[in-house]
Length: 119
Length: 132
Image (cartoon, rainbow over all chains, first blue to last red; front, side, top):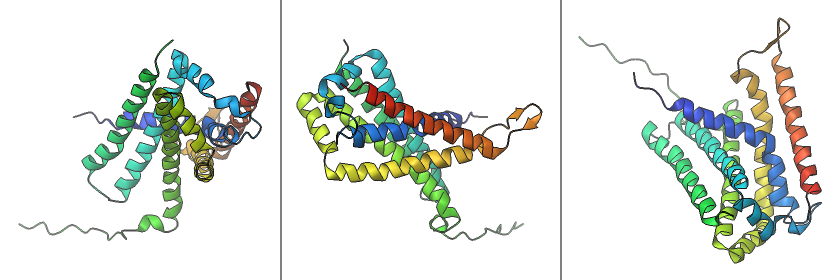
């Protein structure tokens, strides 16, 4: 019998979901509300120099890669399973849409991190 | 010989838009909020790769009222994700037994929610601490 790839997607969904549950709201409050509007955090918190320094460092790259791509795979699994339950389309088409989308965004994330460069 | 047509129970096509399934649908929509926030971060990363001018443009977008509204909506989605994630966790994991008795599901959910609250406060305090 052919092995199902479902456990891989389920694992990525679970990892992304746990990460989002533990750090998602705090991260969003910092990057989307507190830092841009200087509420409790100085506006220089997300300055080009500081964020570039994080994104140049291999460890910083790993953290950014992990957070961004796992969030994508979490969302992709949820949307895939829900659209399947809604009988919106065929299994293959939905897999291509959801997992294909997450895979493409993962590639874009890697390309951006490489383009930023290394120290 | 004809085997006849198997009975297919009719399913209302928009079952997901009505209670009690609406709660399930809303929970699944939180996944869109998680991925949507990642999309904003990825946009920032691409802007960073393209240079300082693009990155500053991304920062200026974050300072716009549209971005604030978007982030408040996404935050509501993320908070709903945290709540539902830990409410469901005891149902999706193996049963935990401590000292011969099975740990109640409500206790596992509560422990997860407390942990989420602790990490939320800790990360905000750390951000405050590392301010330039």
